Structures are given as structure tokens and as C-alpha cells.
Image (tube, rainbow, N blue to C red; front, side, top):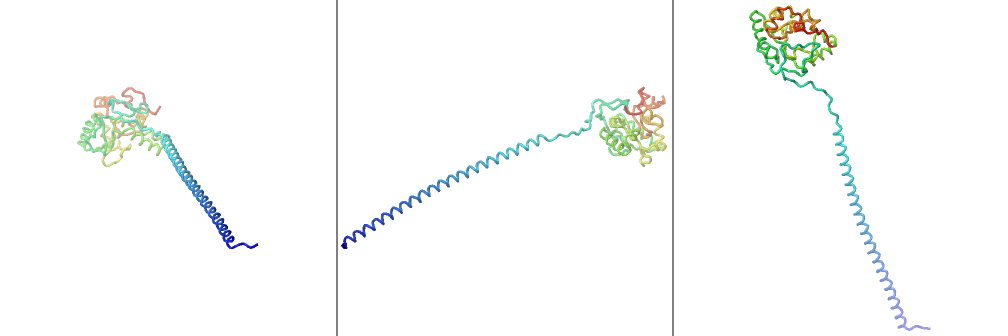
Length: 287
């Protein structure tokens, strides 16, 4: 059987219409897939961005917590800092002036331990820098120096008042050098020194010969001092013979002011020590 040309042309057109329809359908399906994929990607991107923001927020919060913990730790360290345990020397006290007859020795400490005379003055005599003395003794010291000069003797004030702290330093240095047993024979422990009263003075000669040594007593100036100091209210506190009472080795340079009337009575009674003159027990050592 033969087909006509018209029938073949019709069949051919139908074929191409079907092919075109299928192609269009494929294009539409492909386009739908692309759109869906793009939407899914945008959703994922958005979720990822949100996740990143959450991470940043959480990280920031963690950092804040760490800083807060560090601040708290720092505060705790500051609060736990130990305080100094150093005990300072007693603050100087000038409440109430000590009597010129106040006894200070190895058995009797100065009271209060912080005592510092409120009337300290620099006497108008040849002296080492910084030497000061109780004003009640200053004028008598000046008169004594003038009298010694008139008799041809030059005296010099080595030192007078010494604070508790200064005496503590001196005594500790002597102990470190010679041992405590030896230091106790020639140096007072802090709080037990007459120098803290401001009424004691160490006398030397300007040349420095036998300065603060026993041989000062053999110098013309030392002999003059021993013979005449009482006239001006002073006594030689530590003699060659009163160590068992006063507690210290011979110090011909160390004078103590007790006032003219009492110094004169002391001299005339041949008192062996201030302890005996005042009727007090001997103080050969510390209790």
C-alpha cells in the first residue's frame, strides 16, 4: 500500500510538534529545578549567617565571662595581700617632762619608752653637729664650758640626747661586733639609756684625743671635769668604782645633770652612785 504525499507531510508535522512539546516540557522542568536549588542555597546561606552570628555572640559572652573571672581573680589577689608585720619603734612622746632626778639604769627603764624631751635645744658650746640637750641643762653646760676655757681647757660636746631608735641601732651594732655580754658592760639597751632623758652628755676634747675612752680621765680636761662639774649641776655618772651599783665600766666623759643643789650635795656626801644617793637598789645587770 502506498501513502500519499499529503499524508506523509501531515505525519511529519505531527512528529515535530511532539518533539517540540517534549523539549518545552524538559526546559520547564529544568527551570523549576534551578529555582528550587537557588532557594535552598539562599536558605542555607541565611542559616549559615545566623549560625555565625550566634557563634560571635557566644564567643563575645565567653570573653566577657573570662574578663569578669580575671577581674574577680585580680580582686581576690589584692584582698589577700599580706600586711606588714614590722613593729615600728615607739612614737616620740613629750607628754610630761621627766624630773632631773629621774633614775634610768639596767633595772629601771625610761617611761614611757617613747619619751623625747619637748624642750631640746642646741647649746652654745663647741659641739658636734646635731647635738641637743634638755634646755634645763643647756645653760649650766654653757657656763661650765666657759669656766673650763677660763682655766685653759677646751671642751667639746660629743652628743647628749639620743632617741630610743638611735640607741637601739647603736646597741645592736655593738652586740653584732662584740657579743651581748660584752656590749652590756658599756652600752645601754634601748629604753635604758640616760641619753634618752636629754640630761646626759658625753664630753671630749676638740683634738679627739682619748675620745670616749677611759684615758680621757687622765687628760687635764678630764681631771678638770671630774673636779668641777658638780658646780654646774653635773656628776660623773660611771666612775672607776661604781660598776657594781651603776652597771657600766668607767666612763669619765659621761656626765649627768641633776641640778646644782643636788650635784653639790652629791659631791659633799661622797655618794658612790646616783642609785645610792637616791636610796635606790644597785643595778649591776638586767633582770
